[in-house]
Image (cartoon, rainbow, N blue to C red; front, side, top):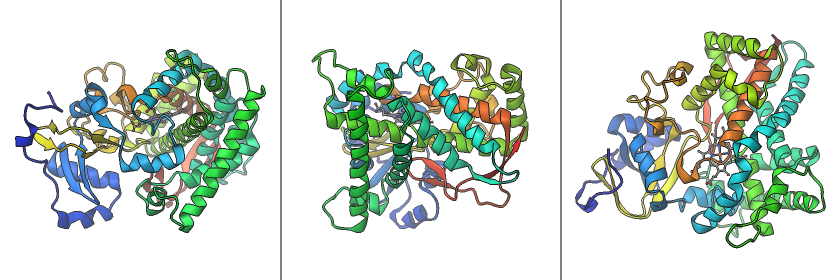
Length: 452
Ligand code: HEM
């Protein structure tokens, strides 16, 4: 199927979508569910009007066109990314154009598989600390799973970034990052586009952002003076030189990259872990099979990166979990030129939404889409499916740079905790997703623990 260009798109109709007077329906449900509903009603290319027209693109072939085949035609110059940039500055997620390309070139080698695999020691150390904490709890005590997952993934990302122990700074930074991780379309987030507006949310934002910058600058400085651990990511960032110009990063760029990695690299993995525990509790037969695989291969020990090849079901479970609960539920792009998808015209300058949440439920590629079934990812099954039907980490040149690290971390944390504990969600607690930048449980996920 060819898409994304046509000899004369101007002659084509605009995509179908709900009439303006149905806009109130958008407020009755969450944005990903609203978009899923529209796609089921109108098809793979839908137009709806909020504050401005949004074009939802939900066919893997069209998504391939946007993210890979014609990617320079689709920029990140959208309102969401401009809002996120008030926190992440010119870091990799929000940067664009030649500046982004230079930074990506510089940073790609730091995330090569052979380098990532060495993080297994840190991941297991941090998970062991959590397991000790859990083992010390009174039987039947309640644990807020999303908070513990967030703590462990933050510790992992901060140790891999900064090396040596930074626990004091880490606690303060976790609190700050929580304030900064809000929905880009929330009013308080939108107001950060006009930082000089004297509203309380802007003053608070400025205060915590300045504090975060100071902490990060201090940690970079510490590295310049020989602190940290020789091979940590900050040392690698300090040593990185552009092949063409021989230049390194300036201080502001360095800070933006570090804050980006901290934010992009911890909530996402924590969310994936939290929903995986939740889904395992709903499907005990899947959990039993997974625990049997772990016990047989590891016998109670933590998994190393090299063990993962012997744990195929673990990976399938994680993949299926992120299909139904993609931690990044959608991404946005702006079309720089007029284009065509599915026989419809998308005007130049349009805001496009690629919603992993609905793409991962596309019935043509995912029969019985709401069922949690790790067999969908069994060896041999992926090859027969469109490779763009499953995109938790997006794809193309701007694919997630931390995908390998995230997969390693999620699998290792699960392997250790599932062998030691039975995790049971508290009965009667409402578990409802809250789609901010990541897709979190709105009221948290309280669980009880029992030794296994
Ligand atoms: C389960 C965990 C994770 C998920 C689901 C995830 C998902 C994504 C997605 C969908 C994008 C593309 C955004 C877009 O194109 O608009 C992205 C980009 C990115 N992610 Fe991740 N991510 C995860 C973990 C991580 C980790 C652990 C790190 C780093 C330590 C990281 C760093 C980044 C960076 C720097 C980018 C921007 C890449 C670029 O544009 O060049 N992510 N991620």
